[in-house]
Image (cartoon, one colour):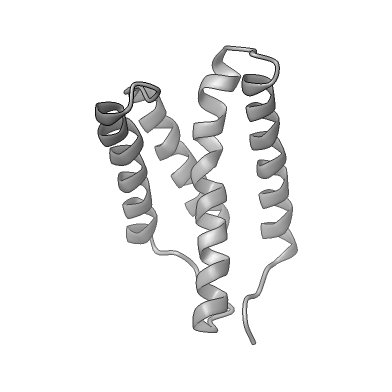
Length: 117
């Protein structure tokens, strides 16, 4: 009954979350700039979000074996790309458009797709 969380899913999630938090710490607390702080968070953001979404759907729908489809993952990628690289930069100067971010979102989405299968 409820959500089934495999050891593999949990391990990958924890590693990605630690890397994400470390990246934010380097960027926000130590003001370190570079590829790591600019793109690594974008690379691993969607795998983290998609894993949390998968666990939530498993729990809410009582589908312990549920996996996101390619279409669902693609929609999450497209939504994230449009929102963070299209809409938000238009309304808020703290956001900037960056095609490399979209590439990082795509790679992260593909990583999640491959890992979940």
